[in-house]
Structures are given as C-alpha cells and as structure tokens.
Image (tube, rainbow, N blue to C red; front, top):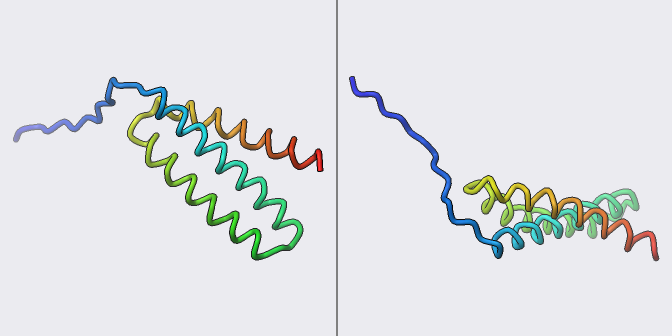
Amino acid sequence: MDEIIITAAASSSFSWMTFISVAIAVALADVCWTMYFIETSNKNAVKAGVWSSLIMLCSAFAVSTYVGEKIYIGAAIVGAFVGTWATIKFHNKK
C-alpha cells in the first residue's frame, strides 16, 4: 500500500498590505469587543447586538486571511493590542 503524505505548505509570499489589513481588521474587532462589553454592562441590548455583529464581520476577514498564512497571526496580535488600548484610552477621555 502506498503511503500518502499530505503537507500544508505555506506560501513564501509575504505581503505587507495583507499584514496591515489583518492588523486593522483585528484592531477593529477589538474595538467592537470593547464597546460590546461596555454596552453589555450598560444593559443596552440593541447597541450590544450591533457591536456583536461587527465583531463577527471583522473577525471573519481576519481569521480567513491568517488561517492560510501563519505569519499573519503576528498582525492579529498587534491589532488586538492596538484596538483594545485605543478604545479604552478614547473611552476614558469622555
């Protein structure tokens, strides 16, 4: 019986545009998460629902991009930090 080896070969083509796009998408998803928690704690169901929908939209793009290329997980990490940090800073200035 022949042995079949299946390998997932990562593409060697790195794109800064894709890296930045993933970082932005995850940053936006984190903004949405942070606002979702704020609206949930304020017991505002409609606003929390809208933020929840936007979480899925931003996350779907990011995940579909970095699943194929593991290098873009770094962009997701950067975007996650920036999104939460910026939202908290902005919210505290109100």
